Image: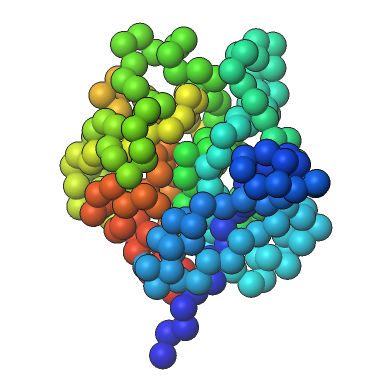
Length: 242
């Protein structure tokens, strides 16, 4: 009998007395649907506090990793763009430092990996890639990547590139996805390939074809806007059982 795989999920962190939860000190946060999507697909979700000293111990327990999104950005200094930091950029340096090391070590260990929104961007930076700091300022005629409607509704379509892991998983040439980001992958990092784009050319997914399962998506599949979203989590859990 195959046991359910334990999949690590990174947490967000908020300042004291912010975001509707009253606390005198900083507190961890994670939307329930990240956990729900993993459990529904047959896995066990294990939230991972931002303790760099515990990373090696985490990696002995988990069979896969999901790096979640959040309302913050990766410091431009981490991809060589510190000379012109856009006014919209906000960072959570401790969280990013923890996730950077966690992702680096998990990829070396060949653990199945799914990066969501900021998690996709971090994957690209870990591999030496760069980011668009603010899409409206760099992409003429950009579609709305920060939707105003609730995220259980699609915002725009994406083209899934044939022959990629994403295409194999979703079995879809085109998907309708939600969208909650103002940054995106710019120069693709080493060993990574593009697996989906928005109509304006913005990169919506990247992956490592030489890794057993390494996928980053710019949207939030945990909302299960389409069948393709659910299939991503099912494929992740399946990869964690191998």
